[in-house]
Structure formats: C-alpha cells, structure tokens
Length: 550
Image (cartoon, rainbow, N blue to C red; front, side, top):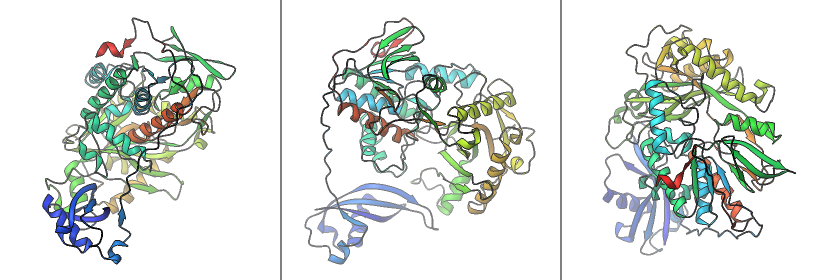
C-alpha cells in the first residue's frame, strides 16, 4: 500500500536517513514497517523563527495494518491512486493541410510536441530567430543598444520565457502540469523541479530545453521556420484559407494555432482589422524594483539566512488600495537575477526580470505593478495596447532616447524627490540607466497606489524600504491586454479553423499555464481531425528552415 503524507517537517540539516524516522514518528509506526519513502513535494516554511522544510512524502508500507485507524483517518494522509491518462479518441474530420502553429513559445512548442507525437506533422512559424542566433541578437541590444525588432527578448524560439527566471510555478490545478514538468526534465531540466513547490530552471537551462524540444518535433515529422512573421490571414466565408508570411509567401492553411505571445501587437491589430472578436482585459503596469539579495534573505529567513541548504529567498506581496480599488502586487520575482531590456519595438523601453539557474547575481528584483482595467481606456479592444505604448515611448524619451531606462531610488520615489545620480547603485538594467523622477512617467493614480502599497509592505517586511532599493521603469508586459475570444471547442468564435492559444491569446499567465493551454488545443485537434495528407513548405531565402539548423 502506498500513502501520501503531507506536512512532514524536516530540519534544514536533515539527512536522507532521517526521513524514515520522522515519517515513522508521524504515523506512529516503526521504521522497519516502511518499505520505501520518496519526496513528492518540498517547500520552505519561514513563517516562524525556526525555518524548516515542509514536505509531502510518498510512503510504501510492508503491510497496511501497522497504522492505527485514527492516524489513517488524518486529513494529511491519503492513499496514492495511480492515475492513467485517458487516451484521446482520434477525430474523423478531414484536414486538407497539416496544422500551422504561429509562435514558438511554451504554448506553441507544447502544442506542436503533442501534435507531432500523434503523427500530425505540425509546421511551426516563428517571426524571431532560433535560440542560438537569438542570444546573439539580444546580447547586442543589451551591450550596444542595437534593437532587432523581429528577434529580441519577446520574439524568437522559446518566447519571452527564454529570457526570464524560467519559473515553472502555476496556480492552475490541471493534471497536464505534471506532463509539462516531466517534459522539461526529459529535455534537460533538473529532476528537482518535479518536487519543488517553486521550481525554476533559469534562462541558461531553458534555452537548451526549448532547442531539444524543437529537435524532437522535427525528428517526429514536424518542421520549423524562423525569421517568418505572420503578416496576413485570408478568410473566406468565415473559414481560414491561407496565411501570408513576411508579406510575400502565401501558405494554404486549414487549421491555424495562434500562439504569438502578449507582445505581438501587429497581430492583434491584424485580427481587429479582420473583425475577429477581441475582448479587452485587465493587466498591470509599473516598475522593476531591486534590493540586495542578502537583505531579502535576512528579511525572509532571519537567523537562518546564509544556510547553504536554503535557496536565495523570494517574496510575493499584495496590497489592495481602498481609495482607488486598484491592486498593487509583486510579479515574476527573480532572486539573484538581473533587470534587462525587453523592448520589441523601436522607440520604446520595457523592463523585464531574468536569472540564471544559479541565481547568484547578489541582487533580487521583482515587478512592482498596479492593476489597470478596460474602464481606463473606455473598453476599446486595443486600448490596453495604446496605454502600454504610451508608457514605453515616454520611458524611452525619459531614458535619453537610446534604450536606457529611467530609474529612481525607492526612497526618493516615496519622498516625491527626483534621483540625481545612480552612480554606484546596485541597479543591473541593460543597456543602461538614466536617473529620473518616475512620478513624471507613471499615471498619477498608479504612482499614488504604488507609494501607499510600498509603505504598507515595509510594515510587514521591515527593511523593504531601504536606501539601496532602486526602481527601474517601465514594466508593461505582465499579461495580455486583451483576449482573442474562443469557444469551448478552443476555436475562435469568429473564424473556423483559427485556434487562439496561450498567454498572448489571453488564456494563460506564465510558462507552465501557457504550455498547458497549448496541450489543450493539441488534444482538441487530435480529437477532432484525421491526420492530414500534406504539409505546406516555405521556399524563401529570407526564411530559416529549422531542419537546416540540426
């Protein structure tokens, strides 16, 4: 018999041999009655003076009888049920051409992987570069301020998550999450992500993972095309007929998965022009805030800070403003990370957070953002995009019109005082910084909510307001500013054969949830259609074929 036992407390200095002893004590049995035990989940509990690991352990007993009935009935003890995946019943609808997937981020990659494993030979179209060339383009931007509008931290193989902390946390309770995590391990991530409550892989690891997934899709009969931007969609009588790549190459298309990410504003505008239903949605805007990592460790871990068995500390903070009804919250916190330029359009400045697997920069950063909603732009479908662009363009100008970002010490911001110099600061933003007054950038109401929230947080996490903390603007890409409306069948309500997918479509919020949405779309396609008979191929010297990169 195998049981799952939650709330097993392990001291920071525990040894593997201690787990069986502690578990036996919890179950009121003898260690010899335990055949085996393995960690299922592990998190850190730092709410008390003594920091410890809170674990869920799967235990296999030699017999089901040693446990007393009153112990067996405890709510933290459940029997492990082996769940077998329900097979997808193949569909029988005809499909003229192999499915085309636009976007090689998590949603597009996992959709393509599932389809390839089911024999559907998907074609993946990505406007940016493959990951190896993309790294060089992004490094050139960070070092020299030379922006490639088609291949940057937003566009290219792996999507925006390729240049991030690589967090694999999610709040969705979907069985597909395990599939996603196991796939990451299968293609190069550390097995520890399967048990950690807050798993992350880091930008250095995720780059290799997405490359390995691409190679597997190609091996299974799929194809990738890079430097291939979707520029038009041809619809006839409510059904998709073809797409145009780079304004010159037309591909016949009977099924299009749109997994473009939340920065593809040209695609949003194209859809709006084609009268495809778009619904404005709330998102959040603000800044990136940086602290010394040692300070965050001390705040969170107290006397245990610096323990080699503890990872660098993170935080997640929320504040509900009673005056305005808006929320302030931290987002995409990167312990031991860097603040980097995330622009995808000329004349705009965007910030993002990134870290490597080691998380050893010595600086902690997080988005610090305030909610905005469709009422702020009169419920216009593209109104959220306009707000983002206005803020990004203003930040570009305040930074010096050279992709340097405006930044301000937190204490100066709280005191309504401009920062005069950032020399010697801990700010890590690349390509560079310009001292500024962020009250002249952010909408006044947003800035006031931010100020009240920061002061409130400092009472809970004493030291959050410190002389070294720096705020760098502007953070605008927290989530999609709209939703591409789809039916329960995952298909667009406006066009037959169009499947909006992932974070850019407004149905996900992070690497894992986007990947899960990609799997859902793939399952729908497999359960609806027969394997197609032909796969369209692109012939263009300007477009890079994925199979040529192998």
